[in-house]
Length: 112
Image (cartoon, rainbow, N blue to C red; front, side, top):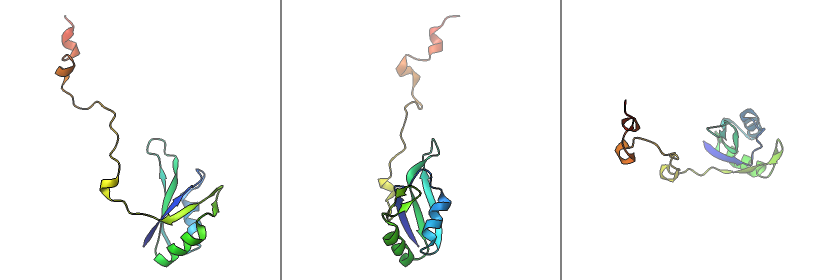
């Protein structure tokens, strides 16, 4: 099985369209468009897994630079990334801080 990177996807492209586009070259195991976690909108790239390495190479050769929906695709063999290369999730602060470093519990400043 070979994984293919597909870049420069139109935001209008569906996973079904992506899969159908590659099926002309052989058996497609999966087609996934990467989406933003917050908005659910396409990030403009995705991955296609093909059963045969030969079919994947043919698809890459034939589809790279060719249009799908309203954009010319960038198609290449996907590069497997090491887990250590992945970005860590962003932290937005907060967490479990000791309140004493911030003047203690604010409720203690009020007298009843």
